[in-house]
Length: 344
Image 1 (cartoon, rainbow, N blue to C red):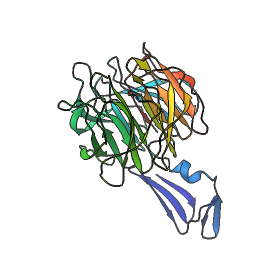
Image 2: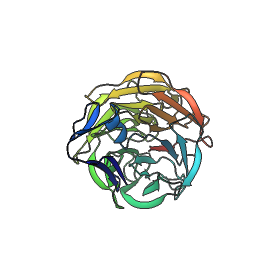
Image 3: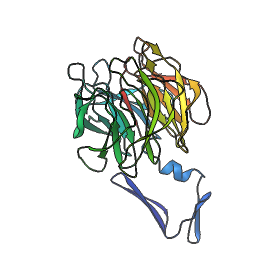
């Protein structure tokens, strides 16, 4: 698909990549092509080239407990309930979630009878359709977390059959159907962390570090997208916790909800992408709950479902523009937790 800006500039979209072809480009509050000027809003570039870790249209919630294979979607443009738009290939919980510009992905996870899997699934954003199996992780795992660059999905941490808390960072391409490769290690193994993504780096925040859930961590790990490398510990959350949700603005990562047995939290933490620093407490969810999934629009973070207990169907929304509490803006199809999230 192509978009003509003028007779000397065009934007071309193909295979999930966007290319701007222009004779001359000078961007402040407008784009100037030779002698022709087309005035655009100051946020045109960031709005048009939306990162895959943020969406402009919809949030998605996939899988969950009890054994759910449903893919749900809710709008970002208005406060509304979710709708059923497709099915995963299996009923699964404890999944990791990733988003490209055109597809949502889930990886790992499983059901109570078979809790660990290496399956990578993909479903389209352009239409309501079921997911397909498109590859394998390097190892079967559950309770992992996902990150997304423009070109690749990442699955980090989790539990595999031989390691109760692994530190593996897997990477798989969005452009083709392929298995994941092991590209690095986190600074600390664990399960049920929260994942965030900036334009340049993936983040893993918090986690359980004991199989029984008796010990939690407040570590914020960061690893680069530009090269295959290990993660580094770059800061701390305000509370050590696991089974929380992650959200990402263009400048900050957020960790919301979660728990440390037997306590649940409603805390929304924020940490900066610009430097290595500790998080700050910037607000509260409407309920203290764990096992919720995170979604990110260009302006708001969302936290969906979860368990208090009992399990909940709440969709919470909080703004990126200021530090504030979340509001309840809709409901999932049913009460569910241990889901994963995507966005477009």
